Image (tube, rainbow, N blue to C red; front, side, top):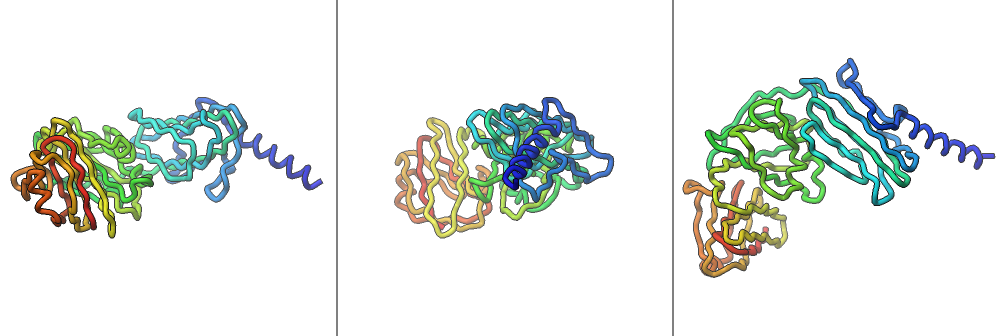
Length: 340
């Protein structure tokens, strides 16, 4: 009898999840009272496991976001076959597809985002969305030859950054290069203010390339403070002219680690943003190529020293420290070995 009752409850739960408006084209609007969450299924909360979805379903929700607000989304769920996906698309058309969600939050500006799930096999799925007022953009900062390092997820803020008559280049240095979900809360807007959304730092980091603005000003907003030490390097693009490749170096305490660049016939730059002292203990590069060390963006005011490959090899070990250290190689491949 108990076994039969348990079987009935399992079937009822599956039907409830599948029947809670799981269809294409659902629309969710912000409730009248600020901070009121919307759950799907309506009976689910974050303290519960995500309910089971029926097989072979396609469901989508368009979540509207009023002007002056942003939305926070958490998803709990997992697919079990190679063809099933969870998908979000923001107002700028940025797409994220995943197969497992552990309630690491997403953040979206106005005017909407789309959430979809398509599962061939069995899957679990639930979500929560809540709307909040945008933070006030109350500060601005200019970018000079030293560049600027921002601990981008440590607090809630919104700041305009600008460079006179020049574009801006962003490089992201997450505290954990394998788990950098905290970067989802940091969004990039073109120009001054929060009206022209571009993307978030989570997506920018996934490209493994610097991002260059289309204007001389951007606004960075972080919606949620995190305990991770995620850094953003902002540089004026004019100092990077002629550099074809820029590679992040992630120093590790009590470790030996490498950084590799290969700009071919163009210059390349290995960039470190760290508070750890670094000691270069080996280098493999062409003996007649040069490497120039800068404490900041490549500029005469930040220049430390220029070496040929042979000179650098003979000078090792060398110690470096500073908020931003760049090793600009004139051409070809170079492999640098450090310890901290």
